[in-house]
Length: 515
Image (tube, rainbow, N blue to C red):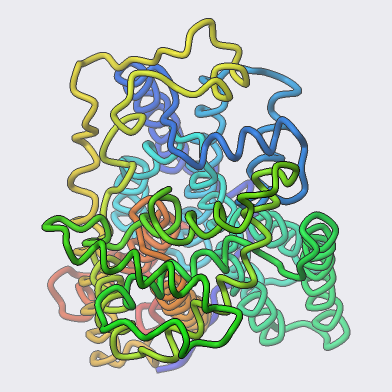
């Protein structure tokens, strides 16, 4: 069998509207998107607020460069506020952007890999009807915007593999920077981008230039963020939240081991460690512990030791503002978290890593399961930002549980499981030799992202479902492609004959199906 690389003779933009089939699919996709959003707004007329929402809004209002969360989403909110205060338009724009990025990925796959017609229909229908995309778009949160930018970033990687050019590389670097500013889950994105650029088929000078743009843009943002932290808090750090999160993760493990005396820890930790020991003694007296499940207890609960230590440290200080107090603790908490993990690696594996691995397989709903955290009102920040006459919010029905989201953890678990089984079946059926080079390269990139996302998510923080929209779409997309290969390779379905040049039915993704 010989490899035959697919080279499209029709531009992508023209190809989208070339056949009646694709025109119909695009029309149905647009109608489905609008119908779903209309139903959502009928059921939930207001956006869904969570604790992060108010931090984003406050950062947007004060136009800060640093805050608890990356500033990209706050800048997005501020940009939209120039044109409108409507919360309806905010959620609609978030949803349209997310669905458009998904369509960009699906149709790129169909165009470059010449997928079967039924494959495109399955990818399009299931992704458009995915309730996760709808519900995260209704949050005043960075989830939908980050998923949008990540899907565009990933799709651009496929295009870079296929046909790189300086315009594409520049656009890719900009999208990467935007994703980086919206959520620090993108910390590993530049490495994957640089690898893809280094391996693509362009002149060495263009590769160097493409990689340089990625490094320069992200480097400038990182340097500016560190400078702002140094100026504001007097500490050198990139993300104060990272230090808090590391300490929180470590405390979930340390709470289950015999306490070590505060005199035995390094001097800079002794006061904090004494408070942690006292707190853990109190927890052992409870029948229902607040840290029984991985979550945000050690991060945000006012009775947890990290918050208490901040209050103790600044008890006599009435001039330092809340953010500076919070951010100034980032380096110390990061060092303390690393110390505890190094001292108790087995406990950390048992009480943090292993539960989080299970969460990655089937993530908890967290705030996705209940509208507005079960409350019938929002804080003054949200009321002011959206110009609402009242702080009261309501739903069409009295039940604030979001029932359509209940199936999502199981669905994601099934997708991950089927993907793993399909990939090994693909290898067993010698798919690497039978598939076209572009598909193999895209599959390896997708696998690298899949493993990086899993590793980063598990190590970084307790996993929740709303963080997994991007990997859910990409994993499902490649699962369908692998299942298609298995179906045709096994002979369950006969390969159809091409009906016209570049029609979607052409199974060119696998080289032995070429005419």
